[in-house]
Length: 186
Image (cartoon, rainbow, N blue to C red):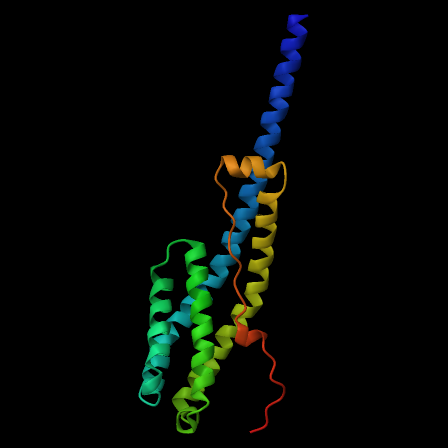
């Protein structure tokens, strides 16, 4: 009888261990998908960060009393470039996006600035980068949501907690991007 109980216990233990390994591998797979999606976005975020010094150079003289915006943008850019963790990069990127939107909106109050060829070219380049980000942000947020859901669901949450899987932030859409002010005729 003890042999049968021992065999049943060993089979049950092997089943539980196999089940735990399966959950762990699934969580690793979903986290790797998030990392892959972010790596695709990271290239574009770096392009955006590289455009910031040019934007500052072009707009700083015309908008001298908007210095706090440039300081915020520079700080966010530096945080992004120094960030090592995905969530730190996301936070800095979200802040860069918010400040960039404010600068472009404020720049519209400076007709000589926005009519300049350098600013127009930079605005087009920034717009292209933002379009690329918007396209990839959806895939990243989908992968992140799938990962976050997987680590929160029972019984996955037991394995996720044991191996210290953490929730990851989504890439935000700024308030300016959410606004719709209607068609503007100038």
